[in-house]
Length: 308
Image (cartoon, rainbow, N blue to C red):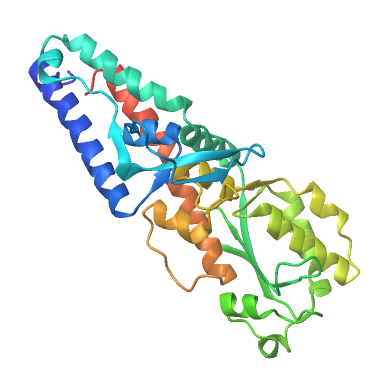
């Protein structure tokens, strides 16, 4: 038989989880000066902006041209919780029902929907993950390093390329790759068909897909290779999904890979802005983002099965 928790035990569980989760989330968020929109404040932290609290700043929505306010968690107040006397009047079934209702409400949140969408994209599919390093970010920039891995972090393709344009100071400061290091490397056209065949045959997950696919297309054009295939790559951008789960950190409504990894509680491994390391960290971030909706579903299932 499944062990049953007493009504008194359920009461303590409901109260302690509410108190502990709020206090821990609040302490962490205050310490890091985190700020979020009202939906995430409610769903993740159980708080709302205090009366007359001014927005910390406005961030651009990834879905429209609107700018939405975000508020410092440290200035927010907790959403009303049940007092002990009120909880004591609740039956075991009511306590379970209230807890279940609160958890199911999180399925309407952006972070849950983003996590679930990612899970559906990779489920039972041979997904590829890629990252590039480039000469700069302009319209004539080219790829100088490309890493492609499978869903489990196994290297499928890796190559450094010799470009026909200089590497900008900003790009060099970020990735540390100089033209002298690339002198003996092949040009993009030598393996263009190999990249094309890979990316057109399997779904691809990219942290910033718009940027990386644009640079791949520009590299094809620069070396006279077929570039039309790039528009047909089945890809998903992880960056905006990460912003939905962990919150945007800039006015564009997005978040950097490094900030997303930190927000997910993942320890960064290796040197940032190298294609191989960034690809591996993208995979680690993907795993954690997908795990979030599974964890909520499992918690709901346990309550529905009267296991907690």
